[in-house]
Structure formats: C-alpha cells, structure tokens
Length: 134
Length: 308
Image 1 (spheres, rainbow over the protein chains, first blue to last red):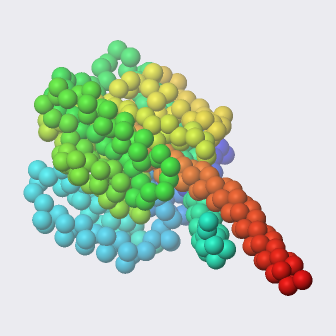
Image 2: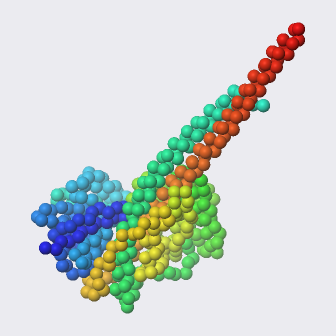
C-alpha cells in the first residue's frame, strides 16, 4: 500500500521526515486524519498533538500551530514549534503558562502584547494536554 | 629614551592583550558557526512557506489577495527596528547600522514622527542618548533567540501597524554575506511588499557564501480542487503575519551571524596588530640592550686606558 510522507518543519529546524500509514493532525476545524490518496488541501494547524500511525505503531508530536499542506500523498506541516510528546517538560510548560498568565493580568486587551501572551497561554496549555495523553 | 624595564613591561602588556583578542576570535568563530547553522536550518521552512504562498496566489489569480498588512497607506509615522549587538569590539558592526538608521531619520525628517524599536544594547544606548523616541527596547532577545520570541516581536509591530500607531515599519540590520563581510540593509517590513508569486525572491533568497541549491518542495498539487480549511481567507489571514514573522526572524539570524563574523575579523586584525607591535618592541628592546652593553664596555675600556 502506498505510504504517506510526513514532514514537520519549524523555522528553527526540520523536525522530522518519515513515512507513515496515517497522520492525525489537529486542524483548524478539529482533528482530521490523512491517509494516502487524500484530496489536496491546505489547513491551519492549532496547537495540539499530531499522531502518526505506521504499521500499528503510534507516535505523537506536539505542534505549536501553523499550517499543513496535503497533496500527492505528502503531508507537509509548517509549525511554529514542534517536539516529540515524550520529550515535553511539563513543569517547564506549566511555568511558562503561569508566567504568561501573570503578565496577561497586568495588560489591557488593547495592548499589543495581549494577544502574544494569550497565544502563549493557549500553546502551553495544549502542550500540557498533549503530554498528559502520552 | 625608554628604559629596558619600560619596554619589557610594554611587551608583556601587549602580549596579554594579544592573548585576549586571540581568545575572543576563537569564541566568535565558534559562535559564528552556530549562527550560520541556524540560518541554514531556517531555510527549508522559509522556502516551503514561500511555496505555499506562491501556490495560494497562483490558484487564486482571479481572486484578490486581500489582507490589511498588504495595504500601503500614506506614511506619516514610521517605525525603525534597529538590530545591533549587546557588546562592542565588533569593528564597524554597530556603527554601520546606527549610521544607516540616522540617515533614514535625516531623509525622513519631514515625517510627523519616526520612532525606534531596538534590539541590542548598542543601538538602544545610542538613540536614547540622542533623545530619540524609543517605543520599545527588546533587550535580551539574543539570549533567548527563538522563532517564537521573534514572532512575539513581529506581532507587536503588526499590532501597532494595524491600530494606526505607525504607517510603515522598517528594519535595519547587517546582512550576512560571508564570515568577513557584512552589508547593512534597510528593508520595509510593513506593509508587506511583493506578496504573491513574485515574492519567492525576498524571503527565500539565500545570501552569499551560504547559497546552496535549495531543495525545493515540489508544488504540492495541481491547480484543481484545492480545498482550504477553515476557509481561504482564514488561511491567508494567518499566512501573511507568518511571512512577516519569518522575515524578522531571518533578519535576526543574519544579524547574529554578522555580529560574530565582524567580531571575528576585528579580533583577527587586533591580534595581528599586537604581533606586529610585539616584534617592533622586541627589536627596540634588543637594540637598547645592546646599546647599554656597548656603552658599559666603552666605559670600562676608557677607564682602563686612563689608568695607563
């Protein structure tokens, strides 16, 4: 059977490039699965866990939001950040979330930093959720 | 004439200086390598983002690529983001950027307002001392330089562009050409220019010595039946700011690599100058010593002569 080529690329480095049977991606409208022969499309990616299934083996990655392009049995994930779920430092994520929440309290919603901090809270929360599912 | 002891002291101090500049050169060389790797590592993402943007533009030739960040308006207030380093001893690295930014200020003195954002202490100190408006200093960005921190900065700039605080945002930084050569560039970051099929060049263009034939991600699909989720506009709404963040992130990486390159060659020069100085001082030292010996001999000989 045909296999998918899955690539996860962040601005800092290419995280992975592997073959898999199926990819489950946290898209803009919820999780979606991709198998070989999927119709080409472009979707937003929300912070969350991306799961690869290859011959019954599952492997999960945390992605921090971005885009995914599907086409020609290729899944190309452009993420702001990504790491294997097994490598998540939950304490670190919690600390970053607390700090961002702290700063958020002192900002007004009009402040330029408000959205940035809000995104951090959301991202770190998703990271912790992804870690709890491992 | 300097005494032997003075010259000896001088030689010792220059030798110490040479030791330090040599060490700094080595440190910069190591950091430069890391910075170059980071530039290379950032390339695939930028190329793929470009590809997606180009695909999107190609597929929607008849539809408009409408986004507020692409709309130019008359510029009354401008913001200049100045990327300098936190430390000096890097040759002309900082002064070149500062000079370029000052020239911009002069050229645009007719504007209602030109304000600065600074990354790096050198630029911040300079413009603060001269009483320029510094909207924000992103100090310490270099210590934790990551894409996310660059994105945070970009989002702040985007926000102030969108709420009308500024009408255009420029970045001044050193572009990395090779380990020994940097070029100061001033580019417009907002409103984003040349977005679409023609934009492959500004984002993806690899520079100078680092240029490698980029492994292009092939066009993901044909032009038919392409679906967007949640919608084309929402994807575009996210792609445009992303392109801005990447632009800033790449400028930061270039600036860091340039800084280490500039410091490396500055320290290299300093080391070889110190070596020259030591050899000329040694020559003087030896000559002086010989002169002293000759003088003493003469005194002995003439003393002996007098006794005859």
